[in-house]
Structure formats: C-alpha cells, structure tokens
Amino acid sequence: MSPTIGGALQTSRAALSEFLPSHEADREARLIVGRVTGRSQASLIADPNAPLDGEQDRRLKEILEARQARQPLSQILREVEFYGRAFEVTQDVLTPRSDTETLIDIALSEPFTRVLDLGTGSGCILTTLLSERPGATGVGTDVSQPALDIAARNLARHGAGDRATLILSDWFERVEGQFDLIVSNPPYIAETEMPELAPEVREWEPHLALTPGGDGLAAYRAITQAAQAHLTPGGRLLVEIGYAQGPAVYRIFDDAGLDPVLLHTDINGHDRVVGGHRP
Image (cartoon, rainbow, N blue to C red):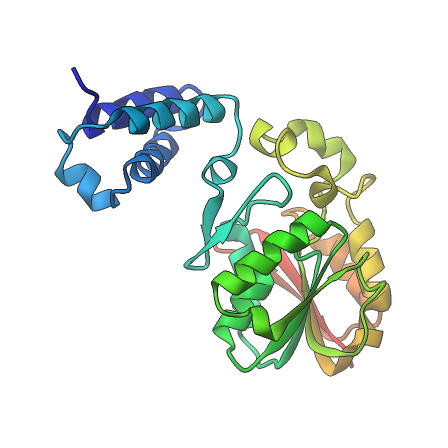
C-alpha cells in the first residue's frame, strides 16, 4: 500500500518525538512533509489520504534519518524563516533564531541610513534591516568567506544586494567610514557552557560563531573598543547577548564611553540586547 500524507505525518511525528517535545515534533513533521510534497500546511490537513510517490517517500526517509542524527532541520532543508522572510542556511552559518528578532525591532525603533553588521553570518540581520528600510545602505563583515557567500545570496534573494557591501574582516579590521547604526550578534557562549548545548547546536553549527572561548565576552570588548571611531555622533551600537550577560556587557559598554547605555529584554523577559550611543 502506498504511503500517504497522513501516514507520513504520523511516521515523522513518531521519529521526531524521540528527542523533541510533542509540539516541536508536530511542527517539524508538518514542515518536513510539506517540503517533501510541495504542499501547504493547510493542504496537508485537508488531504491526508493523498499518496506519496516513490521519490517523495525516499526523500522523507532521508530527511528523517538526518534529523535523527540531530542535524538541525534548517540545515537539512537549507532554509529557515526569520522576521517573515526565508533565508538560506548551511553548516557554514548560525541558524537565525527568533531571539534575534528583538535586535531587529530595537534597530528599527530609530531612523538610520547607513548600517554596519559585524559578523553577518547568513546576512539575516543586514538583509532584514535593509529590506525594512529601503533607503538605507549597509556593510556586512565576517571572517568566513563561505558565510559571506551565503549572505550575498540572501541579500540578493530579498532585493537588497545592490545596497550592501560584504567584507572579509575580523570585526573592524577592514572597515572604513562611519555608520549611524552598528549591529552584531557575536559569538558569546562561554567555553564552559559549550558541553551543555543541544547536539543540534554543539555538533552542527560553526563553533567560531558560537563561542570566543573564555568567559564569552571577548567579542563585546573588541567591538566596543573600536565602535566609537566608526559611529557618527549620536550613532547607535546594538549587540545581542546571552540571557545572563546583561550586567557584564552593560559595564563593558559603559566603560567604553557609550552613553546612554540601555539593556533591552526579549518577549520572554530575558536580557537580550545591549545598546549604546556615541555621545
């Protein structure tokens, strides 16, 4: 008997429930079967008896096998949604996460015309900001050329490639000029916290983008030391932080002479972004 969409959903949920909570298993099952069949979420529910052909069934088993090896679904599907847009994702970049949307919201709360994204990775932050502000231009830096290649494709995909420049650079090393907004989601996980991460993160995402080693604060020190030279008067620096790093990063910003320094929380009430202005 040929496999059906309903059966594929059931099989996928069962496989994913071995390591995911039920709501996440259900969400991923629908994403997987939807991708395999090319159907919308509504169509999956409306037509559970529709058959899968041989190629679809093969692809379903291939995806589930990779997911059971704890490879992130975003990498398997090579795509993830961020701030309402789809972004290409591979093992060369961090998967964009909803936590980072807090940084976007705060960046968009004040006007800007020229933005610098340090450690751009997939380019999700730079692409989103330029897409939301069609009159703005930007620069993205990264130490990984494969990451910059992905960022270039994501910028082009969303029509922002002609307003962005990508530079292979270690933070500000090759950056010239000034910006009224500098943003970064830098590596901030402390070395001692790495073993505690989920396998999807620890074993599959680029360690260089996850941790700087030590106490996890090295990137903030490096960024704040050079930020004022690249900020216009009154310009802003915004960085994403780990949930327990608010007080420490606040002090780093304050010691660097940024004023005022503000600590912002995410939708769950956790410290998520530290911002500061060049006086």
